[in-house]
Length: 327
Ligand code: AQP
Image 1 (tube, rainbow, N blue to C red):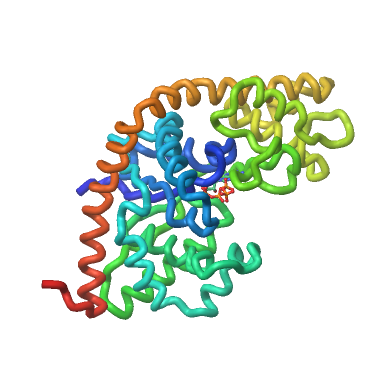
Image 2 (cartoon, helix red, strand yellow; image 1 turned 60 degrees about the vertical axis):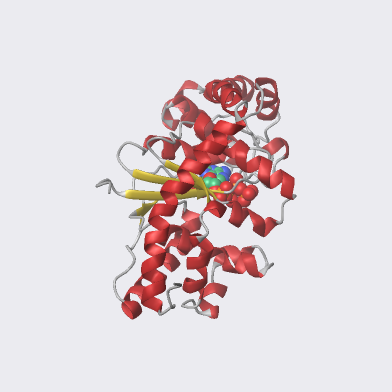
């Protein structure tokens, strides 16, 4: 077994492709943490089902998502890359954990409340998420602020299980060292850029250069002319964050560089920086997507590796909770 800390993270294969925010907030960090950690990265297709996507679309999108992850630097040799639904132990453990979750406890999850209710699947989402993490005995989970409550629930459930049935699960911590940049929608910079919103406010990782340029140029800006971060300038603040991430330059340095210049020049540079950032991703993607058999092989190999760990954990869980072993 690897002595490196085990890190687990997932992403839903929803939308047209991944968007700039997914890259900035998640996948670029995944790519960077592969040497020092034993990484398990999965496509959360079971979680995507809460939105009841078109079946053919979900299937196609899941394979496409693998190609995108590889194009963005996820390496299936160093990391275990798989589809959640290929490891049946995830929903199996979720059931066991659900039996330890209070109805009131699950009802308090703010993400569920924010979505205004919905299916039982959506209600169960955080419990499945806890199973995703605990089944691999993950030490750390790179999460955004919005996922903190779900990680707390995961730790509570692990502790509850361990106290009742004996030490079984590692308690996962939030992965430290992940920058917290949130990318906002270009058309409504008060909300986050999101796959499910789409439209001209979302930059897809696979957008061609012309489309990127058009979207950035028509991004909502604020009154005034100054290129600087401010609470009353959410549009410009967002574009500064994007430029900073793409160029590696700190925001104050960029504010200085654009002092006295108008929004036009600034937006042109932001567009160019995003195009440059994703040009190699688009190129690599074209190579990967042309070979679906290879993508399926990547998923099959990843699922086999993931299953090894998941089956081991689930065998212990079954025994501890008193399920009679099949003969
Ligand atoms: N705008 C964003 N800025 C920074 N990080 C972001 N993430 C998503 N949007 C931004 C991060 O990407 C990962 C994706 O997780 P997900 O696809 O499982 O769900 P999500 O967070 O709900 O992402 P989307 O794009 O908004 O998808 P939909 O529209 O389908 O819900 C997470 O690590 C998230 O923090």
